[in-house]
Image (cartoon, rainbow, N blue to C red; front, side, top):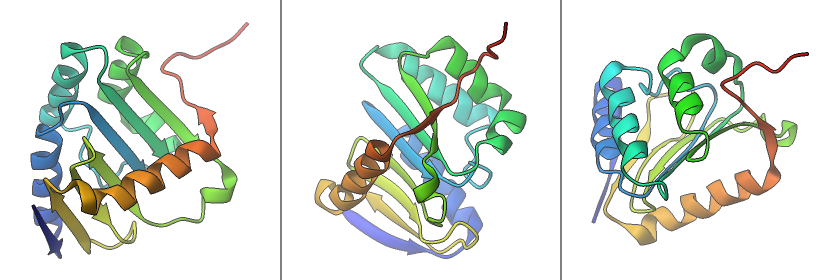
Length: 158
């Protein structure tokens, strides 16, 4: 059970990769646009694919304030969304939440990477601590309850 402050982008990105690799049940993400979380890197996309393919009870939920960069710049994540729509959910958050400026990646309710402001590297890494992750897990649940527009991997049309 540890928590520590991160102040460099390399520490932030390493923490993200290490925390993501620990996922066994759930990955919950709240972010502006995923541009500072290296999900689209080949290694991370493969970790996510392996995570999703193992068990149909596993869940990846992503809530974005600005989904346009995700739509334009995330072909690997879009492919996962197309392949595993029952296990992966991507939402554009409701307009009331668009002014929030933090970022959260919570894994299994035990590990987390919390960036205090979307434009600043200052972050908190939480390892194997359900009690410290609880407040962030509850906050993510509140964000989900606000609802939002579902992002689909397919384009609907007539």
